[in-house]
Image 1 (cartoon, rainbow, N blue to C red):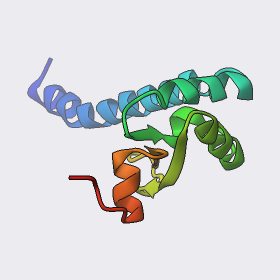
Image 2: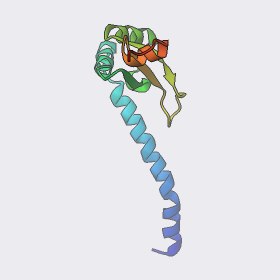
Image 3: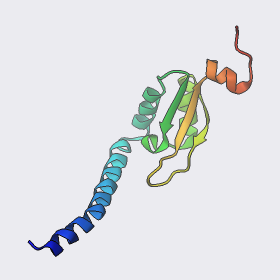
Image 4: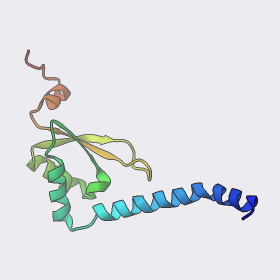
Length: 114
């Protein structure tokens, strides 16, 4: 193999890496979007079992916002809002806080007990 072919292959490696990364992102989206709405709502409810503040990528849930709000309310959380725009390389995430928790009190401006 000549030096020209080696340099050509080395020059094409970044394109191969981008192709592999795109395939991984597509496979991950397919994996998380499997199941019906009830299955995805149960997955969201399991994600919301964290602490006072939970951050959930919206592409992992892939549910209508009304369903997300209903599941969050049933599990004792409320949606504060979204962080970041949804782009192919940077997913939008929903920020949830536990209703009546310390973070919720700070957001509402209630003074913390001393």
